[in-house]
Length: 148
Image (cartoon, rainbow, N blue to C red; front, top):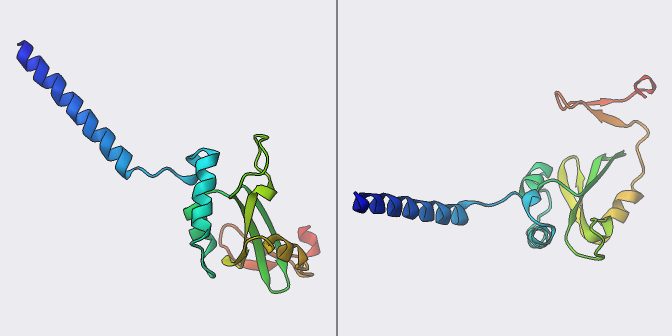
């Protein structure tokens, strides 16, 4: 009887070790589930792999939720800036924009990233006939003064 119990306990222990090994090899945490140091290093590495024209949805899938987001409508399209933490400036427990790399999208496609990107975004004039996105059907429609 003691021999059977030893084999059962040994079998359960081996199964547990195999399970832990598989989880450690296969599991990849989402970027937002990582510590800030790990996420920062991950973002730094992934930003070096970016290419122009990458859809915003692909970037969010790769890097996770952005630390900051800004958006506006300009004369030639809808612009959005996603900020991802990529470097450490001050140990205050908060992520600030100066610790992030901005990624600029026009109409959902990556058009710029890096040091001067946010200044480029800020220099874009806001369109007079702002376009509003309807979340339900993603169709663009001009806004009117009655919408405001």
